[in-house]
Length: 218
Image 1 (cartoon, rainbow, N blue to C red):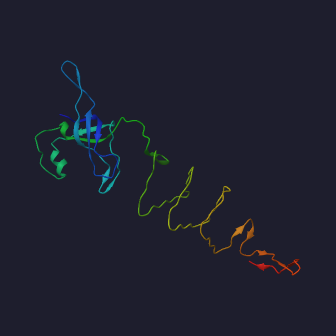
Image 2 (tube, rainbow, N blue to C red):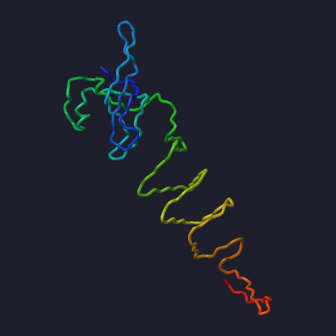
Image 3 (cartoon, helix red, strand yellow):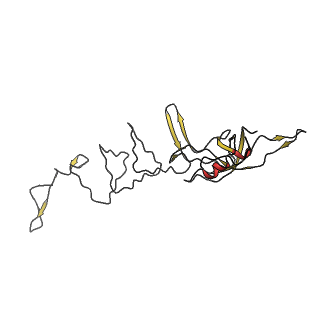
């Protein structure tokens, strides 16, 4: 009669993609001992459903991987018919607490992760060794301070970009625009107004000598 034991993942039908919950093949890690004290390893148990945190169409996809160590529990009755039909049914046999009716419910005794969501008392950290991809109809970020730190570049690709509030550029870098700039207010460059400052325009007499012309407002 099997109850609960530690197992090692041999293989998994899924590999992190968006798909229904799959199954794993596992090997129980606690060896059998014969009457002479000789160890006998367990063979692989195939087609074990594994646990996923899911409610309706909402889920955290984090499929088991080969080499993971985790907990496997064993049902009190034959669950093979429910595994195939996903409906309430009678057991297909009279077996009880069998290795054939295992359920993998999650990992234990595994090493430090390299990709993770971390919760501390005053911090939630999301870390990836590759790309973090967020897709939604709308993404709202709300906080007193929001920072973007990029060691190489920041790219914003949108037909329209709207900024509410003052915009300040620091660091002494040049700003380049490939299209027309329209300002409903004044533009100030090194203290000089583009809207109100004037130019001294010089004319030329017939003999080539310049003569002053009344400054025209720009």
